[in-house]
Image (cartoon, rainbow, N blue to C red; front, side, top):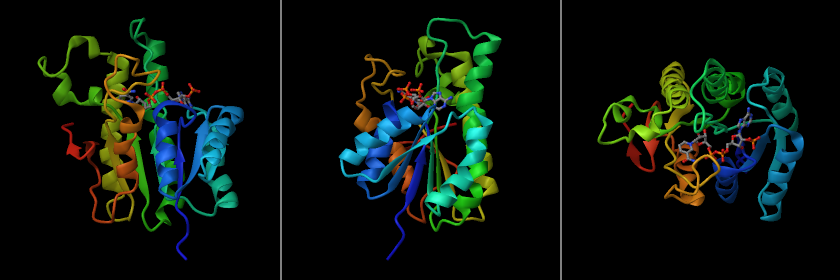
Length: 239
Ligand SMILES: NC(=O)c1ccc[n+]([C@@H]2O[C@H](COP(=O)([O-])OP(=O)(O)OC[C@H]3O[C@@H](n4cnc5c(N)ncnc54)[C@H](OP(=O)(O)O)[C@@H]3O)[C@@H](O)[C@H]2O)c1
């Protein structure tokens, strides 16, 4: 019998991360729901367990080096393998304050450095999977093509630290995909849509259930699927 696939999702305690875990779980994938503390991770996992999904809470503050370093041994010991990494955790700190040095630093740590460092830390495990997939939750606000077009993007969406952190995440997505081109691992970036979460606000037009779909599709790509791309639903987006 084929081994059950295992996915690790960052920032899985609420918003898009929680729904991505739910949708992957409903496909029969075991989900490791990570959050900044064990209690919230366990609580999120318990919600999905009640829905019949095999889910486990795992502590992971994405900017805590010790949490990241502990992952490979923990996963190896308890689950033996890993197939999917969804780098979902993200922050947008500039709604009501200007982009200070501190805001730039925090934003890049969470949105850019962490996804790359978590991915590279988990690579030895992902390389052993027959269908390793890395999904980076980016944003259309990281697209330089769209951001530079006044007609396509209103100036109220120009958040210097957030947008640049997602542009840099897109760059790291391409670099990692190229570095892994000789392996079975596929690495892609996602724009989920403008989604009704705490970050997206109630003004957003898209429901969470739809916002999770692009990440789930890229996490479960077939062997002939793309790598090193940027997607929303089935559409390939410009960098
Ligand atoms: N919503 C949208 O319209 C939209 C559009 C484009 C892209 N995105 C991207 O989609 C992703 C998810 O966004 P969302 O809308 O679901 O946001 P959200 O509702 O604000 O949730 C953000 C998640 O990230 C977690 N997180 C933040 N810092 C963390 C850290 N240091 N360690 C671990 N987890 C951390 C949060 O955990 P805590 O509960 O502990 O804070 C929470 O689980 C983000 O990367 C975001 O940039 C969202």
